[in-house]
Length: 233
Image (cartoon, rainbow, N blue to C red; front, side, top):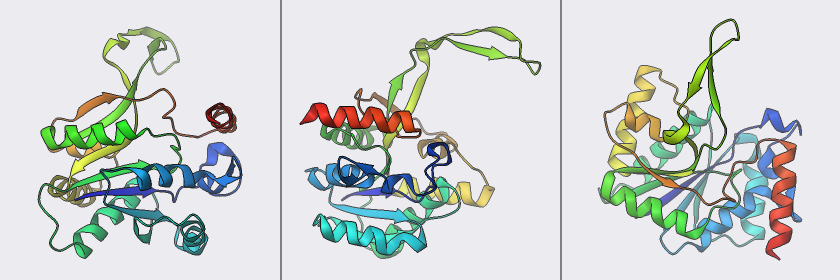
């Protein structure tokens, strides 16, 4: 079984909207709809767990009902940090899917990444079956310089092996449980989901992301998303 865990409990301070950015309007629909729709349509996704703020559960439930999203198994509460929300999703699956097969896969995705492609979802699952964990990412295009504590450049970092991580990020179910529990026990806060897997000495397969799959973080990102959406029509 392949279960998507969609994370939508962050405020998004850089957006400056004063509300959950996944509830902002994009093409007369809430931003979160697009990520949910893409996973709803996926032939390789069986269930969806939506992770949100406790006080926003009713709002998201109305969205699910309005757009008739049938694969959403549950809407659960998130945590203080993104990793805490991912942990809550993992534990929910562990406690509520008692007979889940060991080769089942959890697919973590940001609700603020609206334009994930079907082939990206399929590719992370396919590669996770082979390698245990996988992630989509963009090749770094900009020049990256390393700075000293005084703000002086100390050199250029070779960007040929640098990638900017995106979602979805997929992990085999038993490995995800082990990785998130270990991070919780160690009070370790990673920058993404697969970094918890790497702490266990496991390799993570990186797949190049589609151009339109990016996280909406700033007002400029949201405007770009509106342009992309208009061009799709």
